[in-house]
Image 1: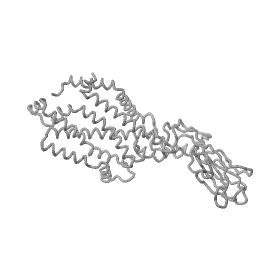
Image 2: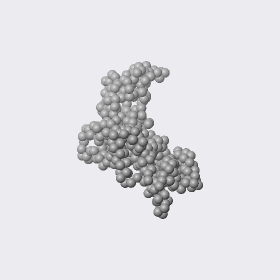
Image 3: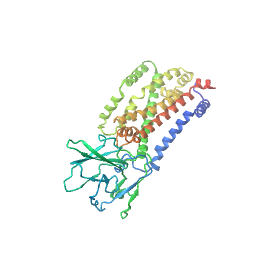
Image 4: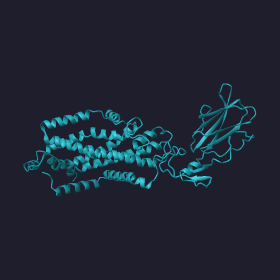
Length: 436
């Protein structure tokens, strides 16, 4: 029979007690709570536009805030190049907007300038070629101003004297620590510098998780991406698990030819290729390349993911429909839908909760995978999967752009799996009796 309210209360009280004794399940619940608070309260506490780009802070590592050198448009021009230079040297302090270099122009007919992020190991490892210069016979000193998308880090500049065959005869290397610099106009536009202020340096806002390859704040994008990923992860499973449970309950309760036809249709849905269906839905909705396909992704999950739940519920309803309380409800004139909704589904609720706890991480991972290959959420919209896709291109040089969103995906999927395992063990009556 349907368990009375007191027995239901005892069941959930026992489940709560077993979960409280399960450290892994408690850790999963705590992680889910933290992730939920991170996504819900994050925009209130961290008021940074996740789409705002700052091309002077591309791929910055996590930092509390840079001191940037202010570059004024009306500043005096570059100082004259001295004629007594005897080696490679800087003409002025180096920053990301300008690295002025000079070296003596004697000793070779041509010189090549290179830039490296590591100390050169030999003449074949001088780095990125920047320019090839030739003395004009009047100047005793050659100079070059490097302004090619620099980062605030240490660079190694090498000047190589070339022989007639363009081979490196000899070279000199200079290590240059490049400071961060920002034009004053940009600082004023961002509200970081007053109209009449002319400081030498200005403190930039902090980026606790760093920035991505377009200078966008990673913390703001992780918050925004988490809201998207968790919304898809919660909304789609809730809908398709409920739809599958109702479908399977009706099929199991009706039985006979109706059950056969309904489950044959469910088997047909299972056979449909999910990825191909997502692509077809994108075409049907007019979603072109480079557009976010959240709607197509949600619809595909709803249309193709319910059969497994339906089969699980059907198997349980086939056992429950012959129970005495179901016969009693029929004799009292209850409709089939009322019996399914009031008597059958509540008795399969524990199994549905376990199914839902595993369906949510599966949906999150599906969204991450599709966004990673460009069929889900695409920039400038953010999700953890699309952020992993963007971070892949800078993995070797700036791994934080991939590791942070990947860590959030892993934490959420692991947390839901731990909670699902805990629920499954807690709702297993035979296992509970064995433990007692």
